[in-house]
Image (tube, rainbow, N blue to C red; front, top):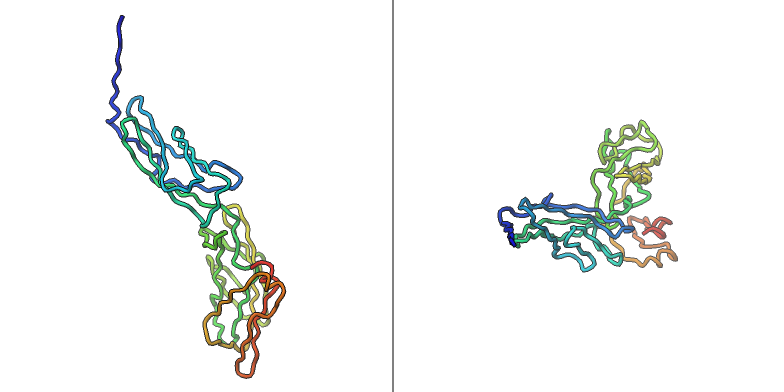
Length: 242
């Protein structure tokens, strides 16, 4: 009888991830976030995966590298970040970074923007507005294409800037389409021509109001300026979409 013993050297090569950083996009309808993969050139070596600094609701299959998430998990920001390791039979370990982004339908910060232009200060061409769409957490999104829904001689779009090309005699409303991935997002802009602009005491005013208050009350604040009374009121957009 013969007994054959085979000895393998698992220390010759370190495990290696296929990427230094993995980026996944979470979809609420799925339990699986994605899969990380590592390889080892040592004969008959094996790889075991582990993750670190991750939320408790996220786990990894130590054999396949598949990362899963419980549906009870709630994102508090637009992405989460943690680390993963690959370990071989010789306990040699390498690490990589994992980022998981929450995919959500993007939006403009408002369904309707008002732009007031002082007719005496208009110089053509004039940059009058910079457009931006955000995610669920109000974080700006990149790689967005903006376009006028109906082309006009008065306006054009340069990247995310709305440019006034010709003088306006009256107020003008236009619709903007934003294209991001497979989404088309829309907003409206009303450009108002005014003779005088009134400057307030501060550059901005901030109000903390309960949403139920806006549904039942219209007046937010009143200012007295040079024998004029300025009232800030809530609009239907404010009352039902803030």
